[in-house]
Image (tube, rainbow, N blue to C red; front, side, top):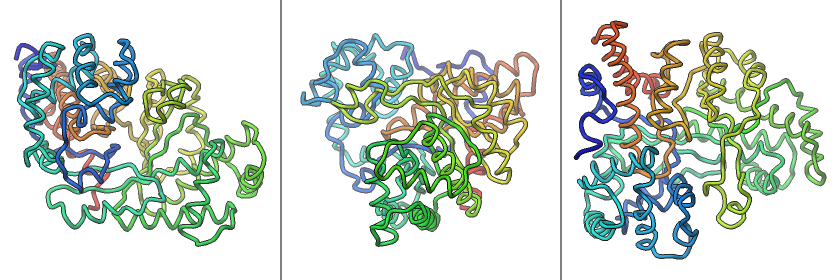
Length: 455
């Protein structure tokens, strides 16, 4: 293959040597958005669009950029029509990570080494459709082929974790743990907030009495249930991060007011701050990690939200977070709690890395979302290495909604890491033996130790 070959992203022999040490290591993925039902049902996918494009808003966004009509992205067109529309514009995606991930999937999973375009879309459709009918292309078989050892799904506190129970019983070589994501109960300004808290309180307390005290009790019961199911972390979407001291009485007044009145911006901020502190208290009691995803501006394109729904490609990089003031109270109050922070706006990176030097319990996650390209990863890792401690970076998370991305996204991270370390060896900054050790640690041992040391 004339591109994405063995030298892909590896600019020197030292980088290649380092990559050889990590390329076949198992995958530890502490954060993704996989559909566990799909894995446990373990049914064959019907076609390449279903497995690659049906849930991937990265692909949808780029197709829209190239003028593809919505009907052939998320609409009523057939999957084959969507695939052919995708293939027609795919070469224009060159140098975007979607291009590389897709070609890596075709190469590594389907043994197809051609550049996808309109001329071979039908042929690749047929080849992949045939292979996807085989047992070794079912979800569980592919996860085993990709050497996924541990993965953590993202789950609402109301989830019964039915499929996690099933996974514990049926999966021998793969550990699947839930992640507790309580955003629906903090985002008091959302239209469905009241409906969400009613359901949670009814489930755990069997009452219709809406009160802050009951909400907190229900959340604590859910948190304990997740803990019994092996959960090791909570995850929080923080478009506007502001931690501060807020009393129960203040939060209770805001809660009660929201049941039939509109809130001010300051009241919304205060309620969210109170809830974030409460989640941190729960995590401290259970010795969980608290994952903070900071700075996304959700549903920026309103027509997509209205016509397609959430997670459809209308989210953007936010620019209004004061990360220094926003983290201050939380970190100073919970120095005995481990945090992992991910930032979508890399303008916050310098401040975040310096905060990590002040607070050893703050861990720096992988580059995220719009920054999970080789370019974004290299910038992210280089800055951590120069200012903080590279060995303390938390490794890779796929953040993926589709199974096939686990291997391709992980490969890009490992190759980028190997190249960074290889270049440093050539510059005489460290010996090759130490570079190889750091690469192995970040690719496998570090996330295993940080998230799963008690598993």
